[in-house]
Length: 70
Image (tube, rainbow, N blue to C red; front, side, top):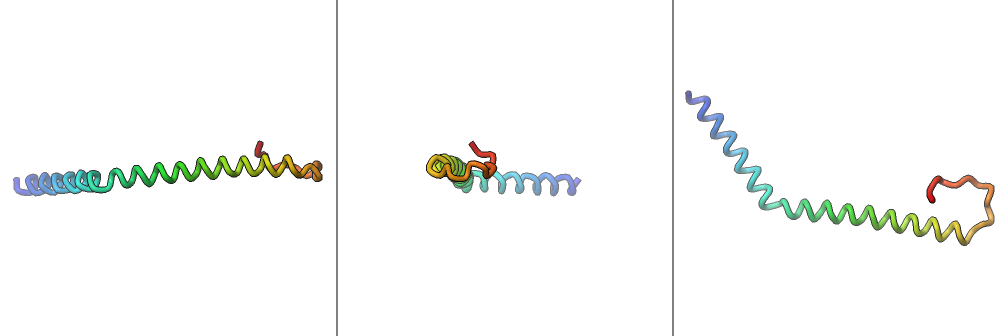
């Protein structure tokens, strides 16, 4: 019977530790994910803008295949 009580106590301690971690660091993790997503979106927007701008200005090499971006 003692093994079951020890197992329950260990599981309860693990759950308490997980809850404490989520409370302490949850918003920081969410904020980091949002910043990372914003960086990817901004990078993609800048990439497409530069490609569009550079292909408008340089029409001298029309026989060179494009990279597939539009």
